[in-house]
Amino acid sequence: MSKVLYACSRNHNFTKTTENKLLEICNELVPDNVRRCPEHGVRVNGRLAYALCMNNCALQESGMSLLLGFLYAKPGEDWTKPGHNHPDGNYALFRNSDDEVEILSDAVGSRTIWYYHDNELFVASTSQRAIILFLGTFFFDARVIPWVLSTGSLGPQFSWDKRLQRLQPDSSVLLNKKTWDLSVNQNPVVFSEAKRPREEHKRLLSNAIRQTVNFLEPIDFAHWVLPLSGGYDSRAILCFLKEQLGIPKDFKTVTWGLESSAHKDGNDAKVARETARSVGVQHSYYHTDISSEPIEEIIDRYLLCSEGRIDHLAGYMDGMEIWRKFHDSNIAGVIRGDEGFGWTRVSSELDVRLSVGCPLCTDYENIKNIIGDFDLPSQQLPPEFIKKEEESLGAWRDRLYHAYRIPTILSALSDIKLSYVEQINPLLSKKILTVARSLPDNLRTDKTLFKEIVGAIGPNVPFANKGANANPKQILGSKALVELLKSEIGSNYANSLFGEMFAKYIFDGIKESQPKAKTRRQKFKEGIRLILPQFIKDFIRSKTLRPRIDSNVLAFRVFIIIKMHKTLEADAAKSTRNTS
Image (cartoon, rainbow, N blue to C red; front, side, top):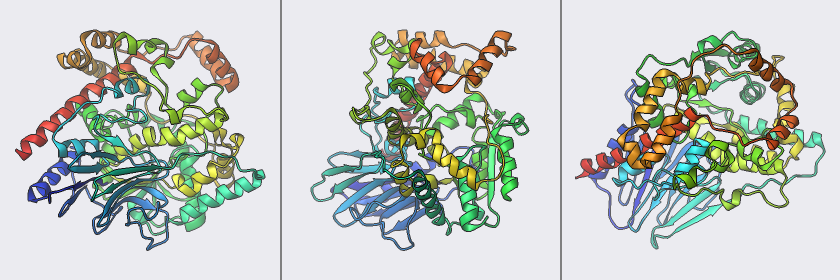
């Protein structure tokens, strides 16, 4: 992996002290379970400096310009000039000229860049912690609180520090070194149906996937792996890779989940293994059962790797051991199947927000009044995320998926892996996304057209209908984790951060779950739920009370806020000590 911090000073040259500080920041970002000694790269050149934490083969350097990630472009295409072009790829891009510095995000912000600007410094990084360690100060942005409570993420705009801005998808920030002014340019996400026959839509989408996969040819596949699930996305990459390039020698697929999932019918784990065997590629299965390490160490490592951006804990309860093994065995990166072909069927605006992971506190029955009751910051969707008058629910859903879910939820999940290895997301190429945004709603809903394409090119192996990882609610209800949640939320630190009444409200809701056999009534309800058409489920939900957030899930989200506040306060103090 590589995480980058890039700094430009207005009036003063950086010094050897800066170089030492950047090396210390790199060391702080290395996960504590990494065994192979990491190599960092630090460059200081006058008023410019940057640091590459755990530098590896997926990074390109040219002068003081940096490309972190992968381009879908012909060899030799110039990506180094500020304002020159906005290339296709999955990347964070930092580029420099005599007069300007520019940072760019890819078409859906699959790799997040944060930036800071004052009268003397411009600092940009793929890590919030790195910027705070560099600045030596931390100013908590309380506006994240309602977003963490309702979504388990930082929401569509904010960072942990109120001074840090997040670069939005398909955007650039240009610094004029002479005037010290910033200019921000963002290309909006636009879905506009093209009037074509269905077969023409299918041909264009298939060709866009083929053309993108062809750009993967220069990769040394012996050092890359494809995480293979039982679903459509990773299978598509595998099958198009075989069709276009052939199965590369020594290429491997991997799947992870509970040890008990490996032989269950319809499970991701078993279906992935059968798919790999059918296609003729090597496959390994890694277990995500809870590590034997103390629970606090597991959670702390998860939070430091994710920087508290997301609460999706279930796949990382092995203490990040899978990703440590990849890094320490010289795996350069993973080729993932994140995509934007279309999302689930919806029947209301609430359905849309829930489906893309962007609900508000007011959307949940048990926290609908939490902002007013405890004087929390207000919460609104940004104006650009509100449904347009002429926009269908399906178009709005998928626009939010591209503009919110990928850069907020999926990018945060990518950050976890990027603490160990690099990542490429070929299905998120601009070429593919452009075609997807031109499809009619009915061909995007439930990824209808994409699934048809994959079904035609893939092996005759049924798709999975069950995940391989543990149920998050079971994890959060375990005795060890419940005790950890109570210890943190019942602390004086939590009282001082939130107030005693709020901390007590969250604390009182924490419950240890006891494994119980399902009653006949519960089994009957589950059976009915499985056979009911989606439109009936949507109708029932629209006529009943708002959904509820599990109290332990809510407590874990509060726990994340407390722990990240502590961590970032400590980072700022550490940086001050190291430079005093």
